Image (cartoon, rainbow, N blue to C red):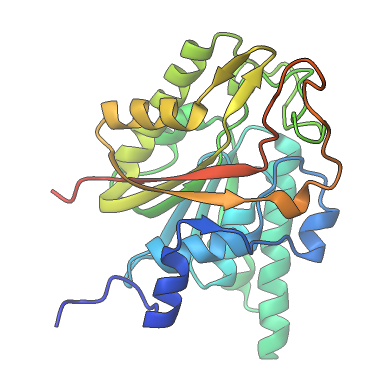
Length: 276
C-alpha cells in the first residue's frame, strides 16, 4: 500500500479536495484584530492538514502579518517561521504565539516550562526580500502566505470599499510599488528564495485576489502563477476561497453605465517544488 502523504481520512480528504471552499470563517479573536488583511486560522489549519507531509515540521510565511499562519502552526504542534515588515504586526504576532504557549502550559497544569515559553515558532521583523538571510536552504516543509496588495496606498476593496493593508512609505513595502510588472518581479524575487528554502516536493500555498484599477483588470493570480513557474515551481492546482459571507455591504459597481463584477473570492495557488 502506498505511503500516506498526510493524516487525513477518506471523508476529510474528499471534503478538502472540493475546488471551492465556502465554509471558512474567522474566529471571535480574529474578528477583533486590527490587521486589515488577516486570513482565518481555519483556512491555515485546512491547508496544513492537507499539504504538510506526515513527517513535516516547519511552516513558513514570508508575509506574516499578524501571524495567523505561525500561530496556527504552533497550535498544531509545528514550528512556524514568519517574516513581517511592520514592526507593530511582528510584535502582535509574537504576542499571539506566546499566548498560545502560555495557554498550553496552563492546560497541561505542569508549571512553567522555560524552554517552551521561549517558543519555537516566531515572526522576525524584516523584509521578505531578505528571506535567505533568515531561512536555511531546504529547511521548510510548507509555505502558506498572502502577498501584499499591489499599489495599495489610497486603495480600497472594490466590493465593499474597506481599506486594504499597507505600511505607509516603507522603502521595502512591495505594496507601494507603482508599476505592476515591477511589483510582480519583486514577488518573483521573494518566491525564488522561498523555493530555495522548501524541501523537494514541498508546497507553497499562495492566497491572492485579482485586481482592478479603474477601467483596467489585472489577473493577479494567473500573472503571479506564471512568474512562479518561470523560477521553477510546478503549478499543481488551484482552490477558490469563497468569502461572500464576509461582504455585508456590497455596492452596485459601475451602476448604471458600466457593469463591474463584485469580487468576493480569492484564489489559493498550489505551487510545488520539484521532488528531485
